[in-house]
Amino acid sequence: MTLKETSLPDAQTVTLATGAVIFRGREVLLIQRGRAPFLGHWSIPGGKVDFGEKITDALHREILEETGIRMEILGLIDAFEALPQKDSEKHYVMIDYACRYLSGDVVAGDDAMDAGFFSIPEAMSRLAWDKTRLAIQRALPYVKD
Image 1 (tube, one colour):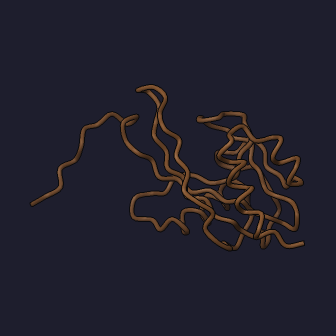
Image 2 (tube, one colour; image 1 turned 180 degrees about the vertical axis):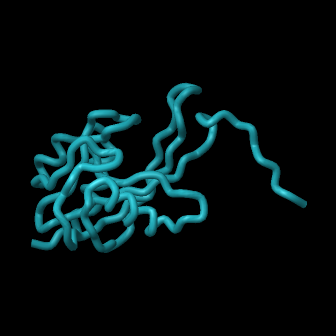
């Protein structure tokens, strides 16, 4: 038996992505999105997982591409979904991790228009999506002064 390639429109597939709540002390790293969805809005860094790529490898790759930093994964936060509201929108599943900054200068790259560390209250006020706020809230037990 062989697998058949599906001919579903791109919008009718599920996209797996990963994201990081990266702490540097009591600051959290945010990026300003340079692409849809949420173009121009602030979010945690991350991106799509490529076929055959481990989720954690994708996370390290995406963080380095978007921000120029290296980080350490501390633990799994949760899985979040963005369900399509209309037929032309994609269905995303995001696996988010709590992380700790290790090294590098923050530079907006790849999909990011801007990037920087912000106090937790400032970061929360910049976010466009409630599920991202929830991810940061759930990552707070990992914060080290």
